[in-house]
Image (cartoon, rainbow, N blue to C red; front, side, top):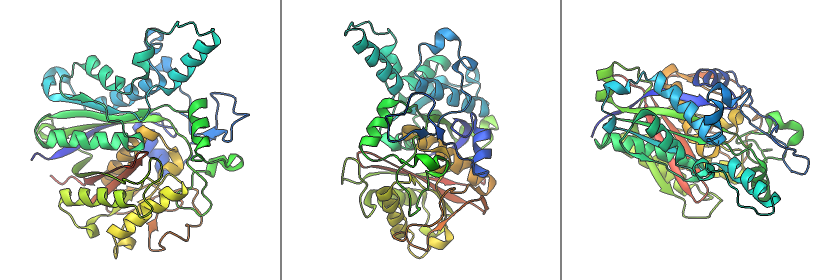
Length: 415
């Protein structure tokens, strides 16, 4: 089995339009929440979200090209391009038959679906759809576009597992390279769900926070007053590469991937298992594959959506697996700053985890004041400010509707 490393990062998020600013604002505890600007929220229970700031598609694409792309396509391409540049990949010098793309989305072109269906109904059901309608909405289109743009003929696919999509995709990339089926894979996830349909749909499920008066602090993982997640948007991308290839290119290495766990709660279509069974098994498998013991893990970037059942489920899984070592593991919930990017969340949180390992800095969990009494008091959650700690091993967790559970284990690269 080959060793697998991360050599490039790219991001566009509600708290930074590239990986550098995203990381800086994570460490500074910046909230990305604000009032929704995309549509009139008067009749909605929630009127805030974590939108990308100062975004203009024409800063990245020409007008003709931008019209062919849904917002989620744009975000994914922007993040991937940054990761490719960060990794200093020169495709003309590499075997592109051995380079693939695994790029995920939980929903795909939600904005285009809503817009075109509304126009269709308003035009007396005259079926004059855009010729780009289908390619703008399908979740796998970012992977396809990247393959075509760079001539990458290796594996090309898209993992769709709701909010664990890009974490599952990252594990797939790890597996392909570990097994020798690829040398380099561009992986990540993108989502652009801040529209009427998504806000209305999640409101109907009572999943979103409705704390409209205190929207800046509404995303408060583990807090006893949390009332739901805050919707976010954006994308993250990572260049996953065999160690042999990375060393040959003299590439910068952010971290090494040594394990991945993919399991199921097998419990409910939206609710997590009350005892965190799937989450426990995913983390356990990641550690087993990585060949380490629970007491060797230094940091967990938790899924921590700020929902009641979800936070409890994950913390119970952590308590079960790391029983006796909880105080030694630092946990943070970075969705307190970015909001929940659904299918893109795993990618940006994997980036944060890699950078934590690389810098020995752990971003804070903001907004959380009083930990829910149902959560073990032994849990060591970073509250309010960044902490400094040697991070040799770290987990990144994500879970999705349908009971999908995924955990990735990273290691500090030491040659």
